[in-house]
Length: 266
Length: 266
View 1 (cartoon, each protein chain N blue to C red):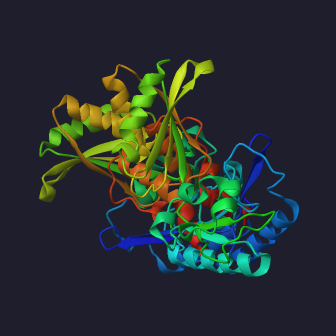
View 2 (cartoon, helix red, strand yellow):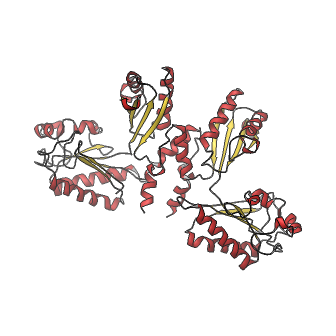
């Protein structure tokens, strides 16, 4: 178990654990069984959209594990969720079986209440199980994906418009940098504004790239970067990528990290 | 064993291995015994200065090991070198017992032949053993230090003077950046020049700092950076430091590297 996050406003818990591929599906099933027993979505309220007591289960490759292994694990887990707990399953991300289901937001749109009313529409049919939500536990999104990076850049201005403009100029959905989601926020108590991002594929667009584009866009508007913040964890490969990009060292490799070489021997 | 380097010109071998503190002195002693048995400095010639068949043995802390542990290991190893193999020992680096011996270059200056003639001078007296070199195996420098970083920046010019000037402006010994050794070289076959460096304490002066100073110094002379190269391994903390410096993220911590968090649990 490497991380647990929960708070009253969201009224949900995000659990991050690491296991050998041979053990991880059993561990995830044990968690899902407890959630199914204890959480009744008809009684549940929280700020975040959700469609299941076990809402979303992404399998994320650690270190050098191939994505294909995580996709197989996701499909194994999804089949067992239906077979053992009678929870219908939607595959998303790299494990998606329909192109329209690659994005989690699209799978979960409308949440439990909406899905309960429309699960018999052909285009909302689950990938595992019958088109009927579990009465108390809803449905579950099961996926495979690389780690996301949550990354913010703070700007020395109180002009929210600057953050919003820059966010718009870099986000993938408005033609900016690929695999970047971005929003502009005010940090009113600190007299700053923030460009808040999710980098959904650091192999395509990494931290140094978005930092330097935001810095240049801010300078064009006469604004300086105050600092940036990496939220939570990032894979070693992403940190190695920042070194490569920032100091123009295209040949730098992960096994030049001393710890990586030693740990890899164990 | 994580690295072995040897070549005919140097006629020496650099062996890097990792071990638990409780085992590392025995392992180093086993290596020193073989070197003492097989290498006779009276027959040995090579490009690199040396004063011992086992020339220099630095104990380098890995991951979170305190330096004090490495200093104790160095002193334990040094005492055993004298006691078991009759090789006089000089402590250097963090393990030095005289301020004048902190720098390896000063301890080793003149090599075996010079030391053999002057070891009875009071200021050349060994820290372990009698003031007499071992007839065939000389003397050994034993130290404790953090990992060195070998780092080069290549410049898009054939003007060697540019590399030499920049090397001079950044090296610690001519008033540049602390803990930086730097020389200018020609890479004639590639039409480039190179600023070649050793960073002796990346906690004080790290890769991003020297890269950005060299880039700015080169630009002032109308020259661009071609690329840089990190030679061999660097500690994870140094890579994390580059991320912090390059994207202005002073709060970024080593345990935000996913692999670090997982490996630390094992």
